[in-house]
Image (cartoon, rainbow, N blue to C red; front, side):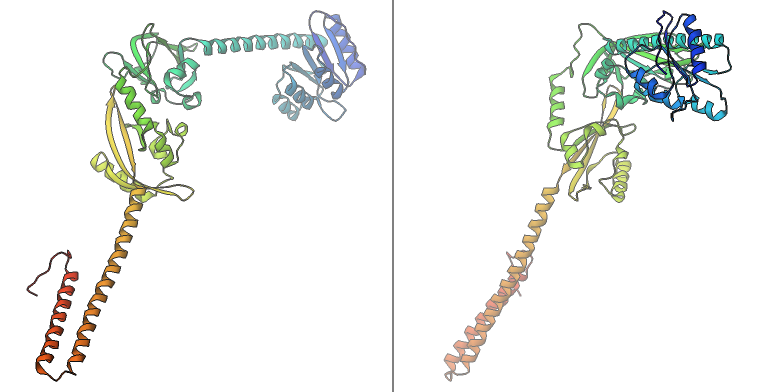
Length: 466
C-alpha cells in the first residue's frame, strides 16, 4: 500500500497494519485528532521508512503481519537500528504472544477490539512516557559528565562500604583504575591519615551499630596513593536515604586543600627510597600484614616470578601459587608462623616454559601511619648455585685425576724397586749386591712416605712415626 502523509503538530505516527480497511480507519481517526500518520502494510516498507530518515515519533505496530516477519520481530530489528517508542496492537492475547511482547522494549499493548479513543489515549501516554525517558536519559548523561568533570574526588558507596561509583579525580588521588575498585571494599584501597598524627582514619558508620544520619566533615587529612603520593584534603561524608529514612548509600567528597603541596614523599630521602625499590635488581614486593594484599612489586619481581604488576596490585599473596609446589609453600608458611619472619629461606620458582629460579626469601615488617606492612626480598641465587655446582664438579674431577696420578707414581716406584731386585740376582759380589738392596730399600721407603702423604687429610703433613 502506498504511503500517505498528512503533517500535523501532535506527532508523527507510523502505522504498520496489513488489513487495509482497519489501517485507513485508524489513520483517518488519528489525522482528525491532529496527528501526522503514515501507514504501511508490510515489514519491509516499515523498516525502509524508519531507515530513510523521515521523522517518526511513534510506531503503532500490528503483531500479526502477513509477509513472514511478525510485528515483534520487526520491532526488535527497528530497535536495533534506533530508539523509538512502539505501541503494539493485536487481536490475539494468549500468553505466548504476551511473553514475547514483554521481552521487547515497548510502550503499551492495545487489543484490536479497543475503541479509537482508547488507542489515542495509549498513544498520548506512550509519547509522554518516551519524552520523560528521553529527558531522564539526557539528565543522567548531564549528571554523569558533571560527575566526571568535578574538581573534587567523589566516591559513592553502598551501605556496606563497597564502591558503587568513583570519578576520575578520586581515582587519580588513590592511584587506581576504576576496574580495580568497583564493587570492592573501600578500606582496601583508601589510605587516609591525619596530617599531624599520621594515624589512619577509620569509618565508624561501616559498623552496623553506628548509623550515618547527618553529613559529616573532617579537615587536615591526607590521602596516600598506591604509589606513595600524598594529597592533602578535606572530607565530606553524606548519607543517601530512601523514602523511609533508611541508609541506601554514602557519598564521600574529597577536596584538595588549597596551597598545600601534594607531591610526595615530603622528604627527598623517601623519594630516593622509592626509586631504589623500583630500580633494584633484587626482586621485592610490599604487602599488607593484615590480609597479605599486594601494594607494590618492582620490575625484578615481575621478571623472576613472571607476574604483571597491574594484575598483582590489590590481590592477596595466597592467590599466587602456580610458580611453587605445595611442599615448599607449607614449609615457608610454617617457618613464617614460627618465627614471624623469613631470613634466607630457600625456594624454587618454576616458570611455565620450564625455566627455574632459585631464590632466598627474606621478610621484614614495618609500619606507616598506623598501618603495618611487610617488605618481601627475594635474592636470586640461581647463577650462584649453578656456579657452585659446576665448581664442585670440577673439584671432584680434579680429585679423581690426582688420585690416579698418585696411584701411578706409587706403581712406578714399585717397578723401579722390582727392577733393582732383579739385577741384584746377577751380582755375585756381596758388597755390590748389598748396594742394590740398599737402593731398593730406599726406593720402597720413598714409596711408603708418598703413600702416607697422599692418604693424609690435608696433604701438607704426615705422621713420620709410621
